[in-house]
Image (cartoon, rainbow, N blue to C red):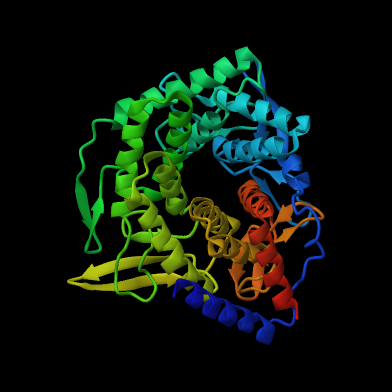
Amino acid sequence: MQKTMMKILLIIFTAFFTSSCSNAVTPKILNENLINTSHLDNLYKDIVIGQDTVGVIQIYADYPSYEPVPAAGEGIAAVDDAARAGVLYWQLYKNTNKNEYLSKVKMLTKFMFVMQRGSGWFYNFVFADGSINRTGVTSEAIPSWWTWRAFWFLSSLSNNQKAFSSEFNANINAAVRKSFIAIRNKYIHLSKDYIIRGGLRLPNWLPSGHAYDQTSVLILGLANYYKTFGDEDALTLINLFSDGLVNAQVKSDSLLSNGTFLSWENLWHAYGNSQSYALLTAYTITANHNYLTAALDEINIFYPKLISELYLSSFNIVKSGDVYSINDKKKYSQIAYDIRPMVWASLKAYEITGENKYAERAGIIGSWLLGNNAAQKQMYFKETGICFDGINNASSVNKNSGAESTIECLLSIIKIQQNGNALNELKSSMNKISR
């Protein structure tokens, strides 16, 4: 039934474009390697912080020159972007064994080292003169998303003697353990409690209370940590936080919201909504079928609805009695950070279940980057490595290309390119809308 419904939705989706998108762009790259890091490499920069030379990723790059520009009042670079770029470069190194990627991984890792405090938390932003932004509300050394992102990146590198010297590896492990101890001490004894938001009973024991999107990143870091060090406290935290995500899933009679994971309280937003991927990762460690079932429900029920809607940006869910309603539904803006979590979750579902429909769905979703979207615009350009910052509305796009858009796009493409079924579906989707 799900496969039949998916085919029907794909026919509707394709018909929309073939009937109304005469200007749709068909990239001339579908038989080539789709990964081009040239633009990201241009955003990369070595800077001096204190006595250390480290690598950073500059935040913004504006059309038409695409030269890096700082974030006003915040800085020129952030741990949040550098960690994601590190994850990408690390994957590229493992795929190619090219030292150019490993070199950037090492330099970005050094940036993590200098931004970490004795508390285990990380500052986020650095200014052009190499001074750290210690007081900005999105830069303080606190348990927040940039710390979880750094922990995820560094924990993916732990105990890798083949790539790093014993000294560098020891420094990585020390940084990871420092963060883990802080996480464990802060959260291991939390008791499960709930809040009511919009008539929904929601978990309140997660980092930042009810930041479900942030929690998904933390689970990924904890999963890496547990695989490397086998710490049972890490397993306890994975279960604690995963239980919270399951309890933040909407099970309603709504034609749209059923199966979705909320992002913050009773708000769903597309960007960073990595809960399904995190739960599937948790399932591979815990074998808890509640996590698998919940993640597959979102992928099977909610993702096809998003595709049929040509994607959405956000909405609120309100429950009155037994009736669910959707308020303040927004279609735009749409960004690459909306797409990558769905691509990764779909491919993880394929990896676990072996069902081709999940890989195919990843390809369909990824084709958003190449023009299969509501604006009928190509967003990623292999020739330059540029990915536009977003779709403003059905007739215009934001042609800037900052770090987040570039990295999230490439993280999507690299996963699709590694899966033949996903890549074939991406090509098929593009061929259909070009006819």
